[in-house]
Length: 361
Image 1 (cartoon, one colour):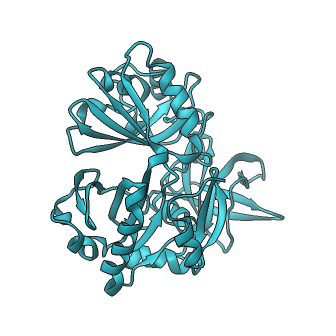
Image 2: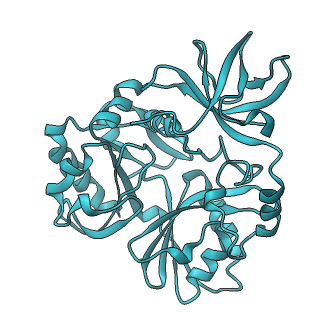
């Protein structure tokens, strides 16, 4: 098991630690619902230093990124970030990721912790043609997600730049909490605003301590991975390994908006055909009509009890108090308002297909 630079800090705060993607990670501190509410209404801090970071540099850096990612990275200017995915050769997804343009010829790719080695091998396999300079800097860097509506106000004293001026999916490289050259990115996985802070491992403890000092009057709290999951699900954000994987295409997963056919990329021809003809299944969002909690792996059935799909993510929404979930179904059941049913052990619970996000602020 690997540790982050803050593992001892989490343990001293009484966090419940669990193995996650090969790391010893805090799953909760005081409980999922309380932590969830902290982020929705105030400000909370996640240690997500297990995430992977690759630096791609050189004259052909963009060409390599354009080949391996589905979104159009040529649209990125310095200081902008973009959500994208790495399509595989067989119609599925190697990983979803964020691409940052750091300099004219330098990009930072932020990938999922469980996929670091797989992603590195996949991107490297296409680099023979481009010979871009690739560096896996995952082990040397930490990542804090400071999330919630009070994040801007609480964190402003820690930096000389105007945090409120950083637009969504934009970033600045600036001073933060007494450390120079920190990436302050207006991104996150919660739908409640805030920042993600990239820094070197040796600087993260100082940043963590100063963040909690600055946020004390705003009720800042540490937040675990369990609340991160309920927060992202209320927004309908896909989780790799649950809602998307090597067998799910970006088209059927509702990620057509990050799949740009204005360029040639891995498997683009097949994906373009799929988009044109329509996928055989679609990822939908649903709310239970009666009390119950849908879970990953539960069957989705039609009115005759026939299995038509599977729940990929599900929970009892802390914000709304209803059972919510995502799952793949045939297109005929994918329209908003469609009625489906979820097999929860021996019970069949009716549900309605709804428009995302579940949580509307």
